[in-house]
Image (cartoon, rainbow, N blue to C red):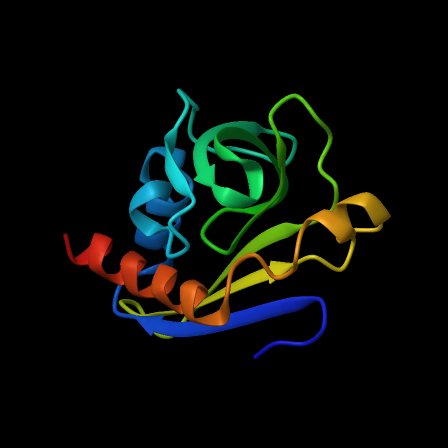
Length: 154
């Protein structure tokens, strides 16, 4: 499901919300989950524990001229239910795009996982001219959900 400024994908995964949240809240796992190919690894970040946390990732992409780092500012945190963050080039404030993971239990061992990529708050005209949103496709987001299922099956 997508509109002009966001894309949302969802999938039922046969694991508890607690198991999924445990994996998602550790930035060390994000390179295994990323369906876009941009995330290369975690840059010595601690587990996400609250709104306001910042974790740094090693990235690569032609849109940034190769390798770069991002600071990810946690904007949503509800244990076993919600993780969200806004991404920015390291050392800068987030320009407005956000990643939102929502978990809805479907019984004790099954969870509806919803992943949203939202760039509706990007207002800087220079960024909008430089970056062709969406940078990540619906298929790549679906691949991230598939990667999450594989990582949990372990």
